[in-house]
Amino acid sequence: MLSREEFIIISLEINLFFQRIMKEHLFFIETSLQPVEADKIAEANALKRSFEHLLSETVSYANGVISEGAIRSNEFVTPFTLRAEEIASMLTGAGIDTNITRAEMELTGISRYGRELNLEDAVADLNARSLNLLEDVIAFQKKLIDIVLRCKILIPLYPLLLEHITREAEYYQETLESLQKRRLPKKSLCDELNFWNNIMGEHAEFIDGLLDPTEKNLKKTANQLANVFERLVKECAKATDRQIIMNSLDATESVQNYKRTATIGLLECKIRSIISPLLGDHVLREANHYLRILNLMRR
Ligand SMILES: [Fe+2]
Ligand SMILES: [Fe+2]
Image (tube, rainbow, N blue to C red):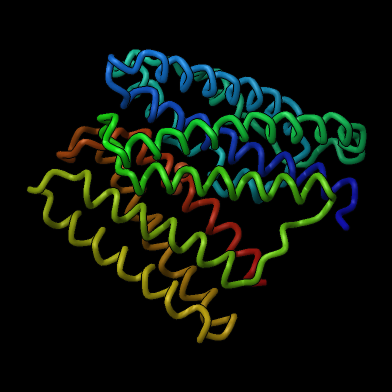
């Protein structure tokens, strides 16, 4: 059982990370749909807006309550997030509430110790509303996958990418469901590591597939990283806990560096690709989040 304080802090940190991730998935869908899909564009936009509202509420509760370590990990915002959002919004015409990002850049860690105890009901309610919205988002994305696989829609997002973001939504959903019961999700070490190692490996594959064919070096490194994560997933069952955690940590630090360099290159328009800088920053934050999990596991 989680203490009241653990419930509040872990819930806020999970929501801060995933609510932004969810609204960005919806932004990517919204800006990839063709004009003929006006109803789906509107649906993606409305779902994105709903997650933005929840996120701005989470930010207001989180200030002075969440851990310093979570803030320092750069999993909520990075030094590149705001600029990436400004570019993404300007070049697509789709809205992004950058005030939330500005507020997140000012977040501070635990300072009003004790006061957060009043937040239990508010946080439980926030979790419940996130769960409701998640149900709609998962249904929307599954419907999209279905019509993509039946070739009834043209969308420049890989089917695997749509499945990938839906898996992330389901992971968030499972986590919230456990937290509402004042527990952490029950998962074996390999279940947890394989989830994230798969995610990291797929990021490398997506980047490889979205880079211009002339970007040989970047593509080669992406391909090597994808292979490393694929191997980690295969090896988990056979390796010792310590071994697999340390190897995952090494690989994730490599992919974090690669994504940081790529995001900077995209922002500076020095890479030929069809990758939005916001997608670069998005996958960088996911690596940052996983690194924080791994560092907690290592202890
Ligand atoms: Fe994602
Ligand atoms: Fe991802």
